[in-house]
Length: 256
Image 1 (cartoon, helix red, strand yellow):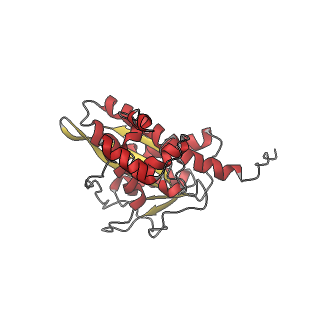
Image 2: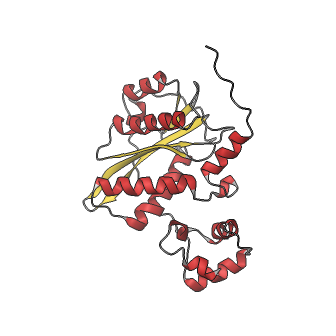
Image 3: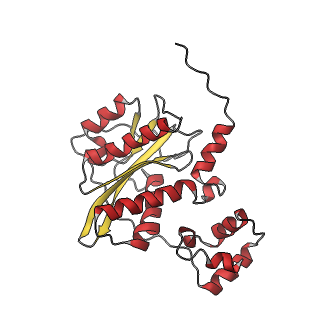
């Protein structure tokens, strides 16, 4: 098992702490105890990553349309495509905080369903992430249905008339967190915190937007398909959603 841990050096799983590493090794077929993993990780000098401080990126919109808060800090859902949460962040570069990244997450599985990176903080940035989320769900056979709640903070990009109209056209129900509430979008901020720790903290600062986009795509793929999540009973978001859909009756074809 010690060799198995050594082989993780340089891989994303190297960031796991003791508990998650134990779960990971058990999935690989090793019958190990937490205390054993803890001892070997200490001997190898392996430690789980620790999150840093959050950068403030939200600038409240003054003239936009503010929807009501439909979640009231309850970031759970009974099924995929019932509640999405969205947010964006800055990414450190050699010239300072320049590149922006927007995300859309599914509250049921914590899956990243949409994302984008750009050099400007505009409504188009968050709209592209939303459009990707809608397209990906449809492409993989689970299209969204009217009434899906899209929750965000009160940033001007999310309260703009253009973005609000985009939500309405796609049948999504807008939800905006309260201003000045540190927990108004806690789920999105938590996952973005993981990105900042696991990608930006390890591989930044970046030189170009292309480097940022490549690192983002690699991490999203790992996060959705390989990263173990304690809140999902140590399954990946993809596995968690697959388990849900496997228990649902097959859809009947639409009548023409």
